Image 1 (cartoon, rainbow, N blue to C red):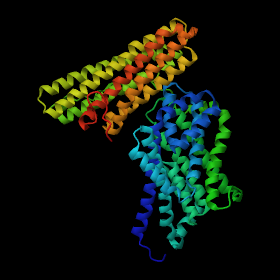
Image 2: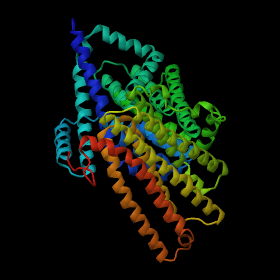
Image 3: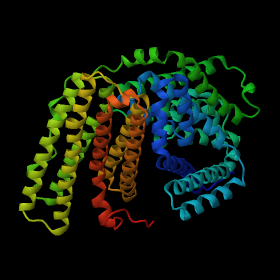
Image 4: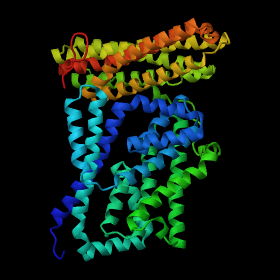
Length: 553
């Protein structure tokens, strides 16, 4: 191509890349919305065995098409004490391999798959009445669009093989592998998907545009960029969670850099990895992550302790932690004041979530320091709630129109409900954990598993509620209210299961019967407290009927 229309050419490539990135995200969103509870359950339970943890991480990453999503979920479990850092590292190493395998699967070129996936996906999404059927349709549509975007990318880049400048640039990257490595890392970080980045790079190799050496460096760089995504997303997380993510970043990113250095210095033959340059590039990506998993898996405890030393334990809390968002100077500007109150209510929700996280660890082993921290947080929570009510009352005295008055009332109601959830944790659940310790009794194995699973389900809903408060997204609000019914049904099923164990005369169930049942009720109350944040949104959109969510849409 002697004189190409560069604007149209780059627009075609950008459009194909954008569709690829969005399609990968579409699949991940569908899996998260349809199977989030199951994924969280599998990930948390897999912490009992390193091999099981690695396999669960691998499977979850293939389902989500994202090792980053698995890393963030695992970091949450590590923060709450549900998974040890060593087990979490095994999950992340498995997830890294899973994301490499899914890239290989998505490169399979079967033209007939596209119309079949689109047809099935659209029918399921438009005609399905159950949540999982609709989300399954979303997943199929996303997969079809991934194949469409790759075909678009192939068509857009085909003329490049005749461009002297393009070939020269790619050949340069093949010689300057360090630059290619950095570009690969930055690109994966920008698109927030190492899978999408690897698919793009391998497609360029398939077109004969990029030499194997450049693709290898870019893909190894994408491993560093993919690990850095989770690191950036968890900078504000608990210290144990940050240690986990940093450990994976150093191992995966450092391993990728060392592998590139070895390949550049030794220049080994690559033919044994595949018959074509594209096959060699993708197989090297899989082999690197497999080797990392096999090498580190037996030593996850040692690796997590060694790298964890880079992040010290936190010092005493800063006085800035107690600063309120309620600005008295904003009371003269109602919209600004309501924004301040909204931020404060979100902070109240964050405090309740923080109190909820360590409850299973406290039930398993009483810890005075953790209990004191929950009590102190509860005191701060109650003060913030009281101050918020006074602030909103003072704002209302200044005279508000109907819309602002309703918003003020909604915020006050949400704050009150969240405080009730905090009371259930600090008063009821803390007391139950103390009783469990002082009486020297333990839950039965199935009873303890049920409580941990139920706690995790409620914690996931609490996190969704915080997201709803920030985004005000109606779809997420509908999901949150729908989960309220699911939680109520699940609590009843767990209560019946517990009564069944009592009838069987299981000693542990008899000894802990009251504690077990009261814990389930308290968790349900906490879930209800968070669910209430969705009602004002659904009332405004007309999705909320007098007793339940509208079935429309």
